[in-house]
Length: 347
Ligand code: SF4
Image 1 (cartoon, protein in one colour):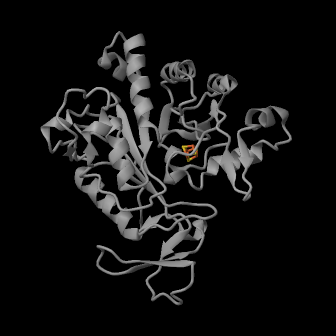
Image 2 (cartoon, rainbow, N blue to C red):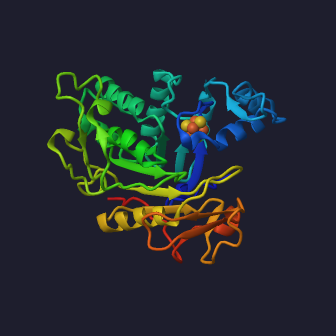
Image 3 (cartoon, rainbow, N blue to C red):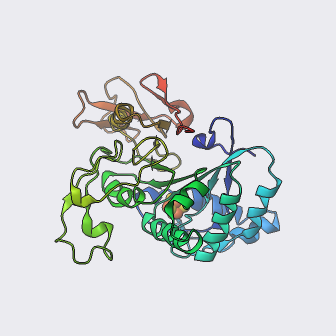
């Protein structure tokens, strides 16, 4: 069945998810309402024994009835065989039920998956993580071991693979994006989903000591620098060079924004999404607005300030913005009357 995740609907490709790794553990605020833990729990009770065995023991219920990961992470190499059967080109989102760079994912698992991805250049492959330090290390180790240390060889082999990080807030953007933009990749992207606060991609503030704690021994004391990751400019020399992506001399070639869905979904201020849309438009970076989530702006006065199905955002925008919990389907994906479904260029 094709994936319902809209950003896998890359033009000319059928959207798909593939899960050779299952199981995870929470790592940041975006994991609070993780859909994968709910899905894994449900699949553990699936009547199909093979599915049941794959997902059994990954989740448990706390004393308060909440679902949690147990921390077990499992490799399912049989999933990789699916690629041999697919004849039509697909856009594959890898490990939607986990994180390919979870600390319990063995390096040999990663290599087996990566070699399959490299061999299937007829497809588009999308990898998204909340653990970019491990991604950075794993890719550099692969380049050293399998590409003779030549980045150019690696880039040629992987131009059909997009590497991305999820960053839900500015703080997480500052922490994760500086690692991402140093990954030698032909395609890089950021997914701001669920969007939980205002973000400024034109000024990612990162502590040098956080970026390269091991590598920067001997450097001056921790300081801040502010790269503009949309335009690929570095505002301080000691931030180090970007490795440009496929389309132009930019550090990123795709930005995805979306609100939170499901039980307990948190609202998004429409101005946060507008800011990213406008910054991407100015820098010429493809922008994909996935959906509002469960909440939608409605230009009427709040009808009952005590009602928890509504929320008023004030802040830097011109007017207060009132959003109402209307449900995902009704909220839709139009931003100021327009859909934004851009994909990275094929160049
Ligand atoms: S990293 Fe993804 S799969 Fe893992 S807990 Fe967080 S949201 Fe869930």
